[in-house]
Length: 591
Image (tube, rainbow, N blue to C red; front, side, top):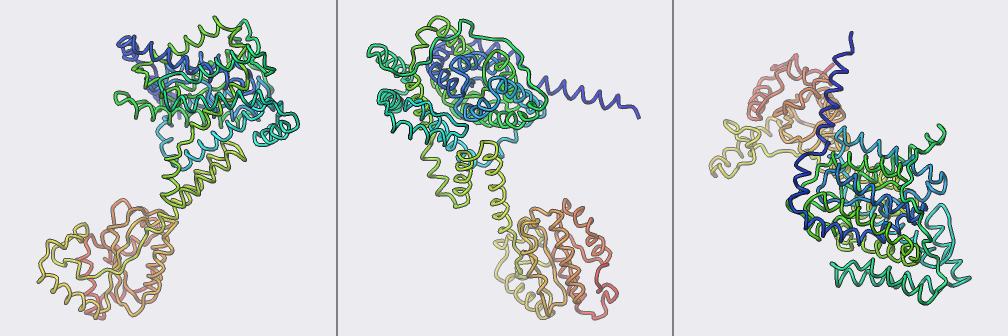
């Protein structure tokens, strides 16, 4: 059989997906609509982003230049091709946490390969429409992950903040080693600079949020060190060529090893970018992001940045928030932010080289502190013990293990706890037959007792007592009947005794999986083997195929023991009990 139609369909699908994520003309028109406000916002964000780009580049282990290149290149590409109009992308603290062990093991070439692979994965995620699934990540996992990232960022800065050279693949070990080295040879100048910069940023951002406090603090620290001639480490001279075009070369064995960290980088970029876009939507009422296009744009940004000497990038929530608060309305603001960074670096490269590393460490420590939302954490902890446990587990795994393992572990744990809670909602209730309007009411109207008068209720009470005397009982199955709770929910049925007919009402079953159908079929067969006739009523049509697969639905249908409405099942049950020989051939175990 020819495969041409399949290839044609695949090409049409690919073309449709590319068309869905490509830039639009309306984006260009929006960039020209309010240029003044976007330029002002872009300049503001550029000023705020400069010390962060330098600090994140150094924190990654590849130097300040790598951070600047990432901010310029990824910031421009993601702005033009991404799914948010006001998002600002570049190097982030979370990404540097992932990159540190990669730099230690594989060097700059390994980081470039990881960035390219992550870019390809993000592009593929955008084309297959994976953006919509990120919203399924539980909030405790996100908050625990963010808290762990903040802790790692702060721990990464301990050596630079103390003026030591302690270095280890694991951040916690490196921080502890730096503290021990500092006690041997204390460096008060570096500690004072980092603590002063962090304190100024934290206080200034609270008192004057519109002022670029981080840049002013770094400038002040640089001036103090130059005038006082303090013996502190600085960034050093930046290269004359900011961009270095080149394709990394690695062996096939190295490439296979780098696939796993590349997947972690792609997952982190997707998560942080879509969360940032969601925050931007909440801050800017007039904009809504396209999650698939956002992944596609971030993928292109991560393909471009490593090729020009940068590092993997993602959207930055803090810079995006500054952009929106500064009046950004279109993608022009993020592009201007990149241009501002480029101009500042090219014009002031020697001055930038004077910035103390301890001052940039203070910037990142303040950034880590501001990442922690105490009110959100307190609210989650108070909601339930399960959420608190997932949050704490994700946090510890992020700090002790690695980011990818932490997210997977958090999601699996949250899913298991959610399934346990869902299983607890499955119930089997022996129902008062007085609540069933025998002549009129359907299954979906059983709860409307307010429409019945007192005389009807008395009649129903008499009817129920008569049915009980005839040994007829009705059970209502409620909630999800699935692998997590089917056995415990139906356990009571297997212990039914001194009953001639059992009516199982299924109109309130919300979910029925293969396990639930199998357990229900086994229960029916067990009851029939003990001489109890089982009648089903109100089976939702969507569950019939699952029951049919077990054979029990066909068996009961052949016996005329499946009913659409419970009143019909009750009437049949009474006829069954009234005549001892009624369905004599039917009361037998199902084969």
